[in-house]
Image 1 (cartoon, rainbow, N blue to C red):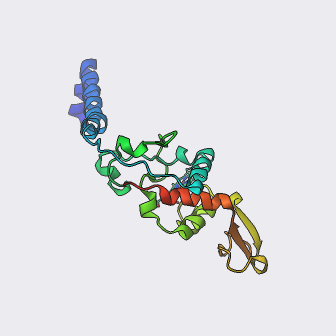
Image 2 (image 1 turned 90 degrees about the vertical axis):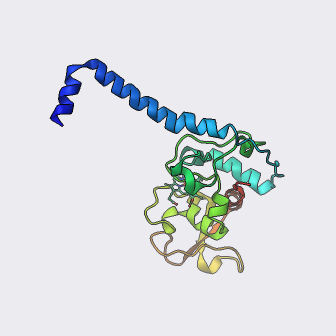
Image 3 (image 1 turned 30 degrees about the vertical axis):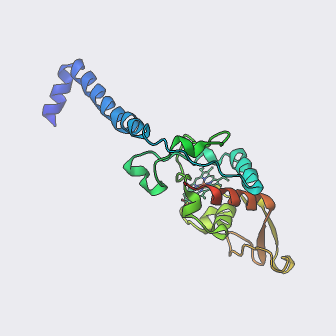
Length: 192
Ligand code: HEC
């Protein structure tokens, strides 16, 4: 340790070269190497026809800023393997604008429609993420649901039933059309 401290205190050039070396190695590993490998991932994918509910849900996804916390870009890197195969240029064909994202405060959603396949799970999670994932830091989106007395819920309607603190005693949540659109969009986000 002291020998290292001595080495650095002697020469500004050593510090400069060490920092430059670390920077270069990181750039090679996280930018240049993945970019070189992606160059050959250029297979064509068909542009799927977009369902109306999915298109509306995508607009709400953008308006709510979901993409500020969720990327839709899987890099060819080990830490990205839980999110799907590495993204290709063709994955964004027809997507205006492509929702690549810059931040990953939540998981990458490129293949969320293959991972979280239940629309019921997605509705509960949207209403309040903590009802499904207790330690979640994702905001709740209760304004896409109508809170009504259990007795007033229309028979056969898709109804969220939760205990306190998520819903007051005797209340249930009915998803509004916007909630169903967001979930239709999420379920459509798949890698082909
Ligand atoms: C402040 C950051 C933040 C925002 C904004 C945000 N999320 Fe999340 N999201 C997270 C985090 C963190 C998780 C992981 C914990 C969890 O599952 O709740 C997550 C998880 C998810 C999951 C589950 C993903 C999986 O692989 O299990 C979905 C689906 C999701 N978010 C959709 C949305 C949608 C739709 C919006 C906008 C309406 C949104 N998120 C907004 C942070 C965020």
